[in-house]
Image 1 (cartoon, rainbow, N blue to C red):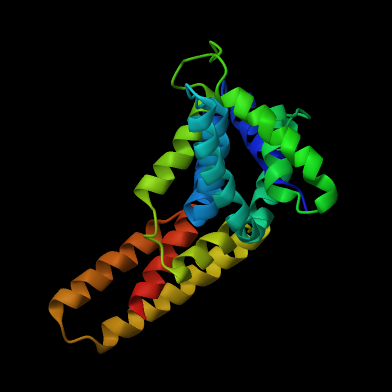
Image 2 (tube, one colour):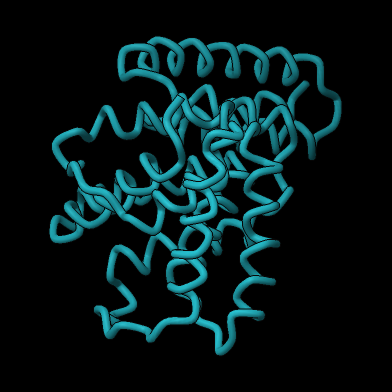
Length: 247
């Protein structure tokens, strides 16, 4: 099973290498944001790996305290990454041309501490912790400071999704989102047609049974909205959500 640095490096690479193509970049951002919306743990891993890379402390004591808390959280929650990895694998595999074979040494050090559990790895873990502590108390390099830099954007994305969505999605909504993100174009085409037809039949049934004018007007409005939706993952999620509301 791949460690998180593999996914983090590839997502950063996808954003960076599609940045100059507005249409492709927006599409990639949308897909990555969708994955973050689905998984709180992904958002938090993404944020913490970014934070450890960008934060600086005046003393080793301050950095050690922060690092201990951050690494403990990552170690305690790494098991939850299993659910999101199939989605991340699909995102990366569908965008192989945008991915580069590169390695962020700092992320590797974080991986060493978080994912190595064998006693034989103790020396490696200790060395990685020393390197990260040194990084956190070192002088900040003057890297690109534009707010639209893909590296910075990936940090903002993870934080924004944590702030905006948090725990708003129910388990059912999370399951719908996960399944939709994993769909191939062929599957989406079939499933969207089916779910659209089922929803319209359900609405027609409710309309024939309804004696409430206000409810009937709402149902007609929803029916018309469904009819206008084009085939897309966003539309599929929308129709599934409307169908759930009708139950």
